[in-house]
Image 1: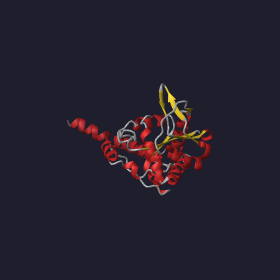
Image 2 (image 1 turned 90 degrees about the vertical axis):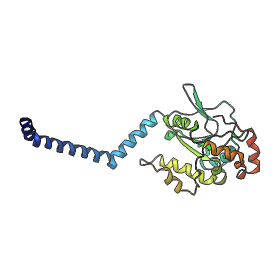
Image 3 (image 1 turned 180 degrees about the vertical axis):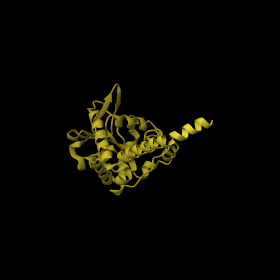
Image 4 (image 1 turned 120 degrees about the vertical axis):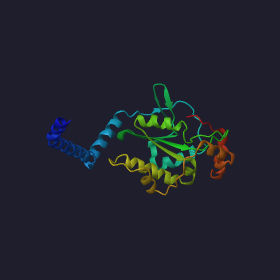
Length: 232
């Protein structure tokens, strides 16, 4: 009605002023959250929060079957990272246990990396593994939750470009100490590592049928595929 309209009109100036002040406050908050200093401080806090819950690896007392190429790549990792690299570690809590292919450990920096070699299928029976939607995602989330980095290489990469794979690991180590982290594409660009797209389960079946791994594995490593297991 007219009375209400006149009342709203009389209060319009006050409400508009309140809205303008609220908008200015909102814009100041957005500017603050987008500032380099805020992002830097927030990342530092996240780093320390992550550091405080980092779960340290344990010595593995079990005999775990290895992939055909694991010992081959281990020699390169040892050459570059020495005693920081091991094959006999595990991560366990609340009855859940995982066994990294390789563990990079730097206790002084509280830095731990799970380094994995992903084969498209198990050599002993052709079972698809490490495909999109596999249990790897749950596994990676477990490591990430407890403060670890996870690096996954395709087996083809560690066979054809072992030195570049080690350089990629080194770039991850360096970037972990930087407040503004480098994204994966930038890390890859710092070395000459060829990208291998992750495969689907159906593609893994096709690769197994074609015996794709035999196309890049040296004969002595291909012979080891027969005793592989897809255990974690």
